[in-house]
Length: 499
Image (tube, rainbow, N blue to C red):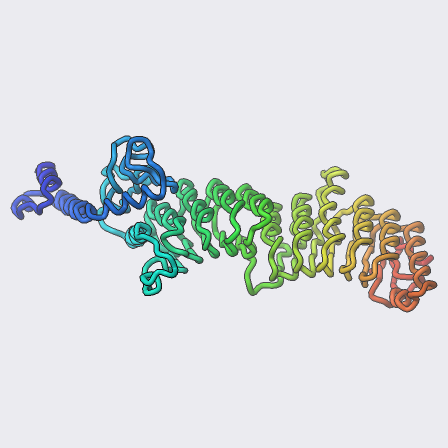
């Protein structure tokens, strides 16, 4: 009886007699009522099929023999991805199971029909798609000037902390990606679970929506695969300025993918980025991330976002046990950043198993930044395990710097060779006010080279400035480098400053 009633109602779209309904059980009655709702929606959507078909035909070329897919990969001609069922317009809009074509298979229902009951996400996506089918008017058109409503006026769309159906997110993102629908600048999907197959539509929105400035994807359960798709879109994006990625499940693999994408995009506008352990915000000039248990991937992503950031002025990354990958990332970032004034990398000693060549090479980006940075005033890199070669390279870079005022390399092992190089740099550097080379194994040779430079300045035309660099000045060794002759600096044994 249930099958007979459903077949009769599907063919006639008329409510069956009450007696026939009474003969059915409770479950059969609910199914019959749901089928009636489907029939009503199917009949109501017939009038809109022609308009929808014309809209999608404009967006993309014909696929196969069917009703035409779109450049958004949705294949809404009623023919699947290849268009195999023949022509036909758009299916009833926004089924719970998704649309034919590029929709994920997991989002399709067995019935391929209308949703049992509409949802807010379905209605919103339907509204956006209907708006896309409306002819676009020039700004000078009288009707355009008189219009003061519709999705085209929408700039902010906040859908966070909602239980959107799985099929709504792809359709919604595809609608936003179509620039003819609306010019959204801020979109929030925070708290909405986004699967890997739906993440490609989020990436599509980032790639095609030229007006998007702020995207909130916090707590969306994004996996590494989903983040990798988003990274591909960010590699060519030039408009997005703020991205929130807090509370997601991605590992260091996903963070490195984002970092590489942002590093490769020299036109990126992304300057405010939030992750699980740190956040770049508009009102936060000091980033205190010491002992924050950051990994190399965290540092890489942070530095990629800091390249063009113009808000942060202080960066503290002490005691995070970075390896050479993080140090290289910081050096590359400082070469591009023009706003950071203070950087502290102390207590990030390189692993002892690391070869000397690799340990020396990881300092090269930092040396380049030291030579070219016009803004950096303070650099602290104490307890880092730097050797003689690294000290020589940093000393050569200091000779080209004219902005740094404070350099702390204490408790390393630059030795006499490194100290001699820093002494030569001091002869031409006119900005440095404080130099700390404490506990660096400096002996007679290094201290002699440093004293010669100081005496040469004292005897030269700039004697006044040389006297300021003597005992009791800000340029001291903290017990290691020797800030001039005499014992006024409180030198420690092995500092080699007595001569």
